[in-house]
Length: 301
Image 1: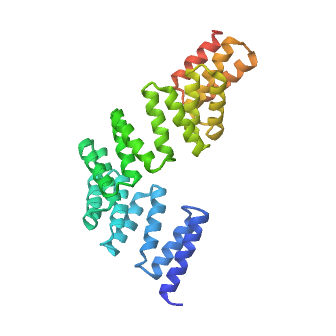
Image 2: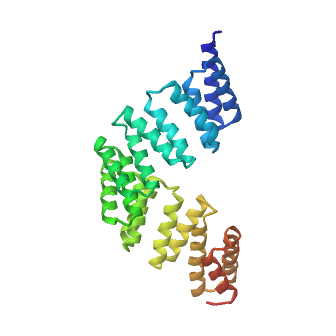
Image 3: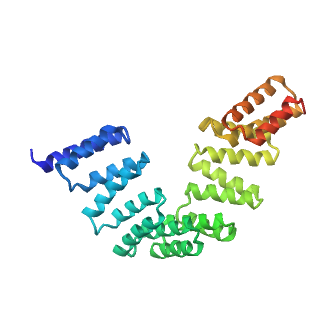
């Protein structure tokens, strides 16, 4: 068996381990053996680099993905990947250099344009970030990612009209884009339009019934509308999907408390108290939970 064949077989073995047990030591060992047989096998370095990224072992990820750049100096993806490692290491200047190199190799590389925009955003350079996201949209007007990045940027800067416009453009391209629907729901909550927000959260749940945050936010809207049964059902569904959510736990306790105030039931009161103690065991600084617990323990109704 020649060296190349052995390298390929070990690489395939690494892929199998990676598929069955992501980030496993066996996958790392197999990829490393493939590289021993063929030191130019870039796919093995890439896979190793991403395993180390997932493990947050950035020094080793850097070594692996630098090697890919050495082997494929004309490959924009190699520079994008290396830039991402630098970004995770918070070496933003080095990350920008890698992304700019990817863009120099392919001026229409949307990923590189978005990455440079994101670095600008992290550096607080709002205008440069907007320019890059808009440039990415010009390069590929049908791509969702550039519009979503731009919408998020507007959203974070409370430029609601601009954010809504970009989100709506995304839905023109992909009506089932869950993150866009969810963000539009949150945005309309901020604007005080609970009815419209509810519509968006329900759409999220149509496409992703296991979206815990959407169930929680839907419950909050029901609570504002004083529909406590619906609110409690929504919070319970959210917590069935993610039991450790602080906000959903507090929200459920609060809705149950409001029901208790109109129809006192000692067993319900004990259930609420247990939930509040649970929340405070996770986060002793949760003021809403502490205030509610104090009211219950003082016997306030």
